[in-house]
Structures are given as C-alpha cells and as structure tokens.
Image (cartoon, rainbow, N blue to C red; front, top):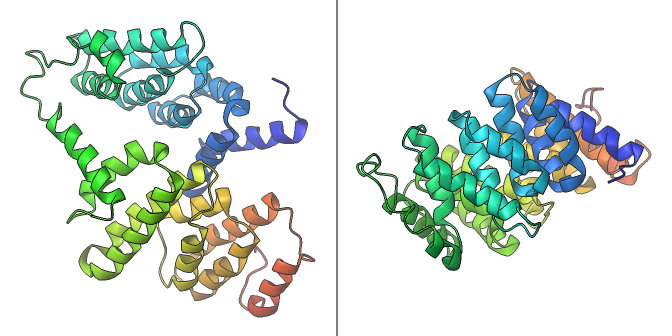
Length: 331
C-alpha cells in the first residue's frame, strides 16, 4: 500500500508518541492510529520489533487489536509466548482476527488461542485470557472447541472462568439499557472489552447516563467521570463525534483537571468548536496546575493542526477576542 508523504509523516510521529512520556499524547496517538487503520500497520509492526519494554510492546498490540489486520497474526502468535500483559494483549489481537476472511488467518489465530488454552504449563493469566477470547466465538465455531472451554483441574478453582464473564456481559447489557451498577468498578471491565463493538448511538446514551450518575453520586463522582472518559476514548478510536457535545460541556465547566482520556478524545476527534471550551478550561485552571494547562494547550494546538486552522480562522479569532488576555503564547 502506497502512503502519501504527509500521511506517512503523521503516522511516524504518532507511532513515536506511543513510547513517549506524555500520557495524553500517547493515548491520543493510539486512538488516532486505530482510526488510520491498515495504513499504519507497517510502521506499528516495525515499532513493535524495536520496542524494548513489555509495556511498549503491549501498547502497540492494543493499537493493533481494533485494526484486525492479517499482518499482525505472526507477531501476535509470537507475543503469546511472552506472557504477562504482552501475552494478554496478543490474545486480544488474535481474537480480532478470528473473523478474518484471508485464507489461514482465522484458523491460525484460533489454533494459537486453543494451543495456549490447552497448555498446562502456560501462565494461568494467559490461559484465562485465551479462554475468554474463545468464549466469545460464534456458536458454530464454539462447538468445534467445546472441550477447550471446559475448565480443567488446573483452572477449576479459578473464579474468573464463567460467572464473572457472564457478569460482565450482564453489566454491559444493563448499562446500555440505562441501568448502571452501584459502583463504577463493576462496569469498568465491560467498557474496556465491549465498547469497541457497541453501536455509536448506544455509547452516546451511555455517556449521558454516566454523566447523570456522576452528578447524583458525589462520593464516587471521580470514578464515574473516569469511566465516562473511557467511553469518550472508545468513541474517538472509531472517529465518532456523536458525544462531542459532552466533551465540550465538560471542558467548559471544568474547574479541576479532567481525566486524560477526555483530552485524548479531543486530540483525536475535536473540531473548531472545541477551541473555546479548551480556552475556558485553561483560563479557569489554578496556577499550580501547570501540567493541566500544558495538556489543554497541547490539545488546542492539535485541533488547530488537524483542522488546518490559523490565527486568521474565524473560530480562532473568536477565542482570542474573548480569552486572549489569559491565554499564554503556547496556545
């Protein structure tokens, strides 16, 4: 696949950001690369080979997961043997390849997951992850690996095999119907594992429901807010702006720093209408919160760059006219 010079440069910078120290830039880069998709796979695989830490390799695998490109099959199969967070991330990549149409890709991914699930010498967490990926298979494929899905003696006392998996599914279904659990922690795993495939409309409704609960449950407001940020990030990964209104309102009303997932989403899908809310949040930030101001300024510049805005653009002029007195030159 031929990549235009400008796109290639953007992909290179985004891949480089994956190993950087800035949480917002790293999360935003991961989301943007997922949106770019197949065009970014070659550089991601090159970066994977160069990655020196398990965290770096796991981060790249998590970016590759929603892209579901056949080229990630062999690296993911090899990564399974590493175990730890890398092995679990690899299992998730392989799960995304089980629906591949290319000859040998789906069967190769299935064989790798089944092999690990049957390997009594494999780390228990990795076997559990492989089993979980297999439990989500379509019924006709599940029938062919039914024996693997039965817990063996080594895993018989493990509490995470069936009921918790079902609990995640139940919590997710209930949340999409507007029935949230008592604690945000009960929904966190469901958001992480299922938001990528939910309809955009259902995620938008979930954002609204989470915000309402956040307002009502003061004691756990911060945790509900973090969960809402995770949903925004899931929407951003898919390039959706259906809940952009909530991002803008959250920034406009912010008097304390928001979770980095909010700014990561703005980095990825924010448009010119986000500039004023970003400026408002910057103006309201307390002086000691320089890191927060830095991240807001970074998001402001990212939106301007992506939307090809300049100081002569109408949206930028409006921001400068209203907030120019409090904005630093870095914005």
